[in-house]
Image (cartoon, rainbow, N blue to C red):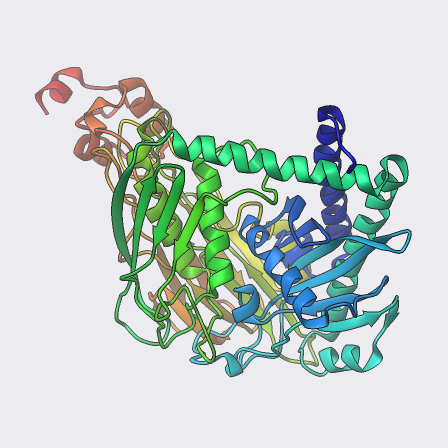
Length: 566
């Protein structure tokens, strides 16, 4: 059996990551939709012939841990009937875990007639034929959410299958963009195929496979050491989502984390579900989220590869919103995942106080605008909104950062939005006083204010007002989100969720995301840090007095006598 020395193993490790980055660059440069080429709502992976992760490059890191499930689904469905040049797509919510908009394209990679791996590219398609353009908010079953595909061969030995392309065109409101984005995903896979072939031509398949096994075994060993160094124990956390999108009742999320020797056990027993609305999530994506949360605390400097996470065991009851099965709705599957990640990190902060991190603002906070008038041109703009992250054991939380679930996903830049769509972004700023107070305060949320220049439609989905970002170790909670929609006739909407509805020209939509929780006693925060935040108008003088006990004069100078008295 061939062996790979440590130097060759490191060359392969870095090469496959570089290869995945080239794949993602190809996807972003070729995509037709701004949500992909600007927002980066995508992820690509290079996997071995068994479907084990090797290289990844992310827009959305949440996708990475579930792409291998898609490869396994294709292998199980087609068996030996997988040929060079084939491309398969799928989006089934119960197989890959996400909503139907996230379409995963998969292509086998052959070298000299031998199957050596798979390339995969997942990207968000703006419209998949649901009951509403873009994303529907009132679905109660999967059949209302658009075209649903299990593993489907769409290119056979390099030749597009015409009837499947025609079928896709008939099931989307954005035919050109949809096919263009699919072609971009295929281009990404072909890039991975070409790049991996260059490596295999130099070192051979046997040495490559031996290096891959070394990479997997190193991941196993490092995870065992990391978990084995933690104290044994069990920790429980729970929180509530505002609602499921169709009802008004809060939705409970509960997590029990247990460390036992070299094993980390996550039990979701006690979590609500499945629920009537569309916040249910497939099991593979739930496990992917927990892997992501795990990596934020355990060896975050190492890339995810096959062999990782074998120390992690996940228990999901059959009746659980995070273990969705037919026919429950999954359109807003990610809503509960941000809260679940915060619960996990808070539990693990007990075992790792040196890395303790308060909760972050949590949800994707989605804002969408669109037109359905074919005469004026149909278009869809959909974006997440950044917010505040939790204070850490040794530093303040980050401000205006996308949530943990989305990683590299970005809001649409003002210049792109105003060029492509009849929407003006009038304000994009930090939200003062939104951060939770603490020795290390949370990060600040943001304000984004949009004005409709033409008659459009809009949809909003904000979360985490019932359980905003909580503090740790005496730190205070961050503020929750807030929405104000001001119509030209003087009426105002203040809810956090708004199903697709008309926004007449002149309507102003103002969104405010939450801040992160604080970490540590606010009274132990340095006067210099407090003064800096007040000087930058991130913390008001009133908040400085009420939260930190620090009084400022009218000239912005700390009044030591009054501060000591407080």
